[in-house]
Length: 257
View 1: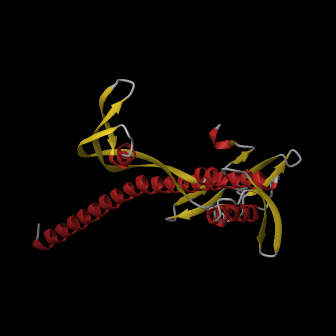
View 2 (view 1 turned 30 degrees about the horizontal axis):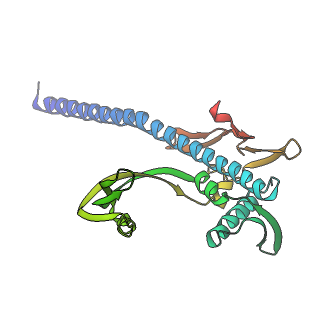
């Protein structure tokens, strides 16, 4: 075989090898895309579904708070949100803002009946339960008090902040020692927020939720505005899909069934 033929054959083999390597790399990358991209899209779909459910829950709760101060539901979710937030703001500025009160929003003045504990219920409803660990530094005092029941001196341990009360007592005998100490205490609290106008709209379609009054206005229902499946292309060959996110009917959530 001539040197020229050998050279041509070598080039063909090299080209074939390069193409094979390219095909392997391309196939590997495509496999990774087929595994991770759909998972990312599914996570995105779940995120928007959970966010939509959260918005719907807030809109339903807003309606209940609105009814508690006005006596009725209102299909205008934006107005209801504005009213219940304004009442909460008024209670922040004045803790005696209870019972029948005149509320002015824009050019409209109307009467609301604010129940006692409205602010607490509001903050726990529109809030996330949280816990934290606080380090409490304290001092324990050892004192001697005369006990009339025992007819003798008795040793007691009290917190330093209460020491003055005991020392002013006629039965106080002596302060023996003060011992500093610290402990870790778990505190439960709510990270509260105000429901805002953005929660009135579906995060996928940006259309308002459908709020309807049932049973002659005695109950309320919140529906997802998605009527047909929303399909949005991702990376040409994949698609994001959002189906109807369900409803809350008089407190019953369709997604809890």
